[in-house]
Image (cartoon, helix red, strand yellow):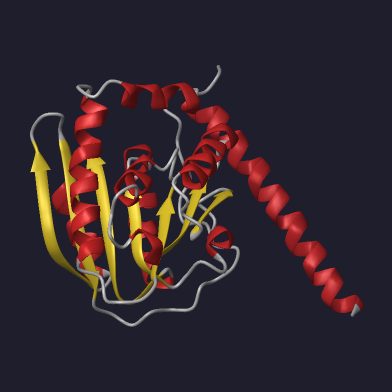
Length: 244
């Protein structure tokens, strides 16, 4: 079975009255508020599973701090990643880079963290309970001291908003704001990291994105293939160190 066409999926945003566009407006309002209250100087941002970058790039189009933002947008789909790059160029945002990479692996964040703003939007719906818990628990490896995390999650039968907020609390975050939107059914949370940043561990799996159109058996096979590739890379690195 073929997976979701994520390039076509983004066409939902072409309709300003769609539930996707209404969700985006809520998220952008929170991002605009956070950026407007950031300390003077560079604002380092990481956007996880960024898609076409509608949330951050849409805000930066006319934000007074637009040129202070140094951001890495991480997106696996090549078509969406290229659209995000093109949009950043159109907006003359030289501080924006787009990495076509698996955001579920810690290696995708090397050189971009610790960041002062982390955006976790949209993709949380496609993670299972264990992956959400692991991702939140590992956020101290991505965050600078006092960093802000803006996260958004649609309705789900697993991990209610209250449960996710509890995960943030256990990971050392303090809630700044929370917004529930009954229609189209969205929770947006804003959390401040009050703990001590941790060093980024290479080769760590934060989460596995679960395409709802791909059967679980196919996802398992994909995961095994990724693990096999990762093991081969580790062996090559170890061999390289021995040879040198």
